[in-house]
Image (cartoon, rainbow, N blue to C red; front, top):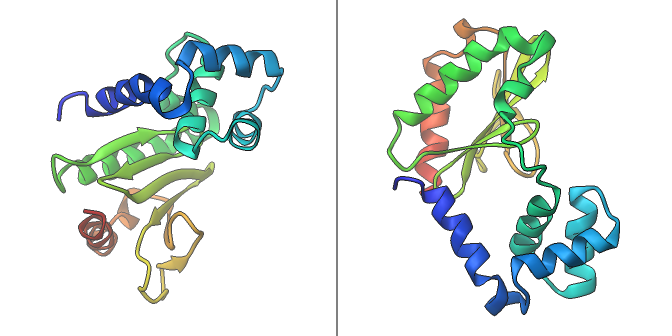
Length: 181
């Protein structure tokens, strides 16, 4: 599974001409000439005006906005007043990696997705003193620390320190992981 996200990305890029009728370079010409500067705007335009499926539109938008610089998204999330939350984030990621060799860590601009075949958890530094740990536990009752959340993650646990990342929370992560395969 070495470099599987990179291989998957390259496969999508290779499939662009067959699936969309244009190469990545041709799509970059379309998106850059549109003048749109936000990821969501570019995705919407590609889907509405060109019939591109969401996955390919997302890829094209991301490539359009790449600056050519490698950005450490996780470091950016925990810069400044949220720096004290980074060890807790690292503990969650370290634990998730023990669940199986198929765990994929996918940093985004404001969160980190933990995926298997699909997302099972989402780590979001929500405030300067709290991480929201989203969990895909559809069908589970919300009770106590396990709250209802949003469409991407049915539940969340608010974590303010390492002591709150206890066996109960780890069991919820294990359950979410087991359902994502």
